[in-house]
Length: 123
Image (cartoon, rainbow, N blue to C red; front, side, top):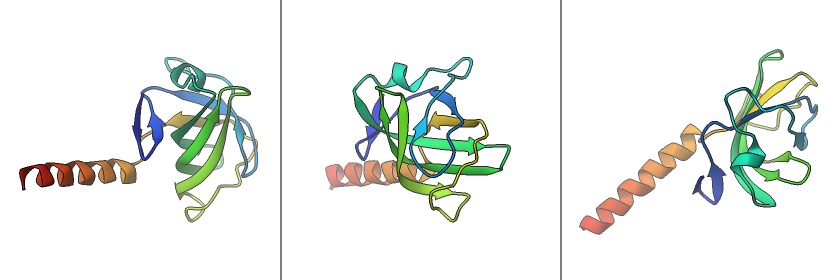
């Protein structure tokens, strides 16, 4: 597990959810070949980078949320990008893929911070 901006990310973490609306998701089945959020994040609560995709409704969202081990839920605290003009998506009750990801914006922030740190060391 690694962190950027105090949010965690981990490789190959993916579950489904059929929760509808704009609120906290209840996580369900772990995708074959992947780990569950509970396997990757064993603290009572962990801030994580997430992505949610509902391919049936063609809606999606990336952001920073809080995974809660008890109840295996994911709150959607900060939306970084979405199919709803970068606001919370009002998801339908379809099955959605919910997974841990490092959003491109955060990856570029990390690269910039690393470059600045190297230049300050050299200067």
